[in-house]
Image 1: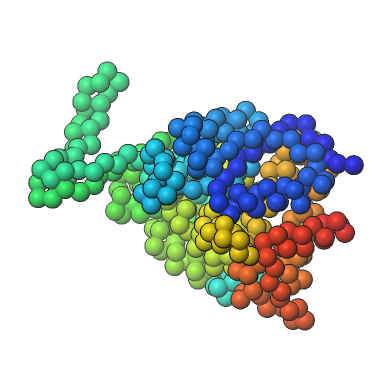
Image 2: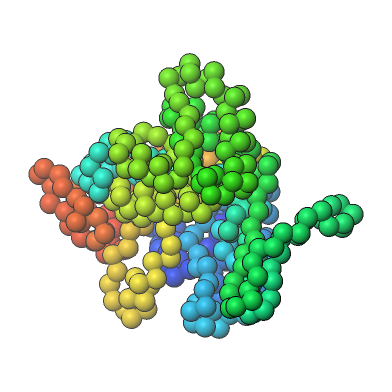
Length: 403
């Protein structure tokens, strides 16, 4: 008998190869066991363009309504994509839009399997990356500027009176580009609280880094608020033998590479975007990292940490075989199903989600995996075998059936 759900998950479909795998994961691994109940939103690039990106906002508001969402990887268009898909405009990052509405922090952790070697030999334990999910460059306003023009940063009071007008740059000699970005004290404080709470739950020390020596006001504000918030957690950290350290982002990178792992690395939005890919790749593959956005008011959005796997999608369109790692996308589904089960009091849903995760890990540890993992795998007595995208899902399904 299938497990019944009470409350829907918000399902956000995506683009390219991950969109293909999304459908197959549901059909092969979830729907045979769960009477899946979702509120569906198509965040494929064509539909975002068709709806003037309103569908993205609607999906985020639905996530606030139902509390748990699961999202497929999506395209953030650049000029090339705009021409390829004949878009009306270069729409903003859907992840940025969703995170701006939900606020919160993105926690990303590697999915570890015996036999998958890290590119950084010293990393013995997981590095959890906490990414601030609001503002900065993802909500920035940018403009092309013509030669002879000037750009200013202008502040007004509530009545519209100019408080300060600061020259950004005089483009007297040459045209160029300018950009303005922002963040808020409330969001930074929520980010800090989320990091310290998560660290206590997982028994991890916290490393936070910005570049306040260069961005003295902007990054300096992050540093100040983190220090103020940590005062509320300092005693609990001491009691649990944990520490909190603020340092510059370049120093943090050096510390992380030299570490053994077992740390929560808190990053601003852009730094977290880049560094999470670095950490995921160093642990083995971008396809082996879980990701969840946790909002201050208790909403959760699960997704894979990687993109839409464009190269494999073009092969798929030509009818060629692909070997695409779907583990992170599967873990997005299991994370969302487990959280839905926790919130709705459906223990069977949580048990199923954990069994599916265990089946994924067992499949790889027993030597059946997608092509990206083959060069990284070394386990005594096990010879790795490369599987196609669909073969891997069926290999997981066979272990799940036995479980």
